[in-house]
Image (cartoon, rainbow, N blue to C red; front, side, top):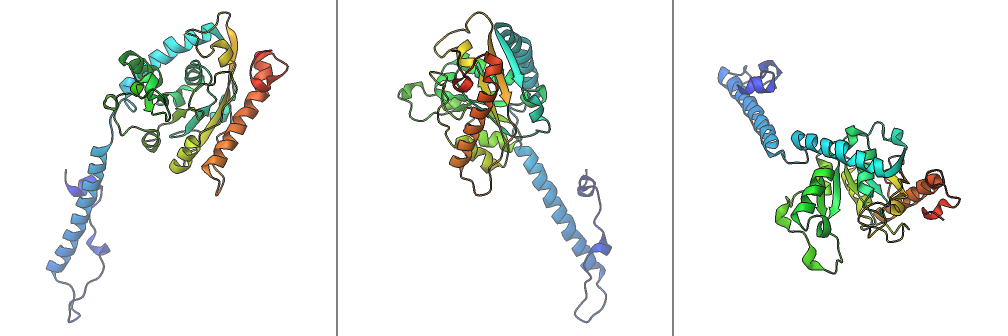
Length: 300
């Protein structure tokens, strides 16, 4: 294929700037040919540049259609029916996600191993198809079987948690492409799920938010979707190997997408996000859990 065919148009000599010789005569054929050749060379360089960018496009499990199809079976035919059968799930506010596309950050309070399955299963398929979940490298990527299951069900990428006492439990970096991060995934147009508390709450109370998620959204110029998880710590407390029997009620309540205000710091934005998740949780806890005092998100 010629350069002109790849570009879709031929250089137009009439569009070239007029040239005059030193004595004011019309340009010679050689000068016109030279100018056209310069245009062709510029076009070829542009084509090479675009081809080079295409060659650098990453192909991995995060954008693989095959992986997405296998993940669909794992999530929608195995995980969601299981979670929906052992808990009584209520999803609120999915209409607030209409219009979302490409990269965005999804954040939630974190108190149970039910949290990620609930979120992924509650999302519309269009948004969950390529959702990548940030998972603690020292726990979910430390052994091969847990790493494999986490990647299969949640399209997970490792996040190193600071301040861990047992440094021996850190994930082996060679197991995952070191270039994969929340930033790189957002820049490629994939949504990511992160838990700003950094770890599960021990008592259901929401901890302080680290500003990383807020800083991430601001740096990548993408919205953050806050959501409140309600009752997950009751249905599956921290330390339990399986949810409690009896199909206890749990809820997933989505909020409106948010962006930082002009000149708002990451810490201030993070605080505002935490306040919004608290507001959503308090608003819907009584309806979902049937309690008179929803402020703590636990049953009396």
